[in-house]
Image 1 (cartoon, one colour):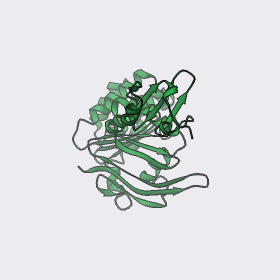
Image 2 (image 1 turned 180 degrees about the vertical axis):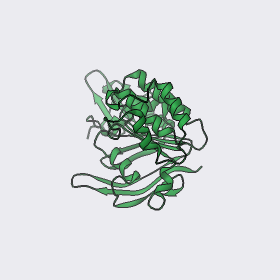
Image 3 (image 1 turned 90 degrees about the horizontal axis):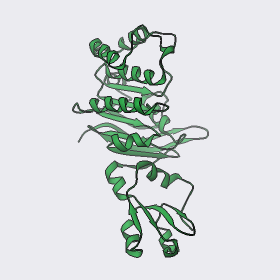
Image 4 (image 1 turned 135 degrees about the vertical axis):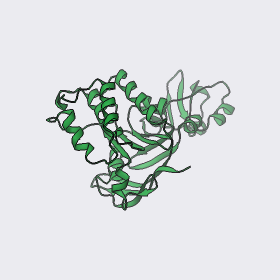
Length: 288
């Protein structure tokens, strides 16, 4: 299967932070959830992929083209939505559209007008008067009206109410129905990714910790609960994270079968993306 995005050995050094050989790929037809706590490298990675900050080393291929060599051609098939920062408050929706549309030979005006009707937006509205949810809908309309094949979304649902988040996710599901499409979806709202993503890419302190199919990752990680009197120091080492009190323990592990064999009475449960992420970066760590 071809990749819509392939990042290899991407590095970017700042005085107090660095991306360290970031490598991952997104197959076509997939939505990749890009997760990590705030300040761990998600936005820096996206900005480096897009050339908005100059990477130190590494290669980026989008839709089979090298970003360093074919950036102009790539951007015709790329839609980008940031949490905030590129819609001009002083402009009307129509004026903002006129600026964006000029950059895309394949801009489809009828498609854009259909989005405005669907979202209840009027072309004469000033961007300054739009709610955050309406701004995000406008940003998606602009990103999708030139027939992009790959979307990069950086915290698109941050600060939005659940109803608007569901509307935006429904729009992205429609986008993914077309063959050969792909999405890189950076978000700290992991509940959206539980229902929408196919692949999870997990970054922490500028390093990729996990990059794999979501279902495989969640199948491998399990939450274990039981009687703490049955725990031994050896068993504690098989947990990524472990919480104990006088009456019970709970912890996340990738070795549930081993623990079940040693402790037959434990309860083993499935986990979600947030629980998995916090198992690697949370404060509760195994006994040493």
